[in-house]
Image (cartoon, rainbow, N blue to C red; front, side):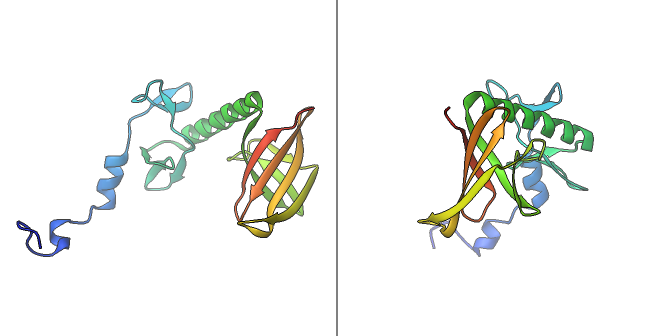
Length: 164
């Protein structure tokens, strides 16, 4: 034991309560026409998708946001989904999600605001995910053809616009 250390490690390093950690992790945000942004960054950055846990407050994937109304959360998430969608269309690539519903492959954004049925899909072997560990899908957004790849046991779909 190093000098100056006495007693058990538990006594010297008390466990932080969840409430304390939640309050410490909570940030202040500003409402920019319905989209919640973190003003401590330059330029201000969007907080990300917000999840409501009744009785506990609203959380982004990284930290507690505070107490928001369900309407504020829905507005923020819808505006964020639309901004991501427009960015993907402009850049020609992005991340969407692949779901299987009623025997059909559906491509959507995180909250499901934009949903598209695939026109073709195929499964193949992948060196990490194994047999049928890779799923390729093709779909249209407007007149543009897109290709997406999902690898492994998740819904993450990396998508790119197909060159004409």
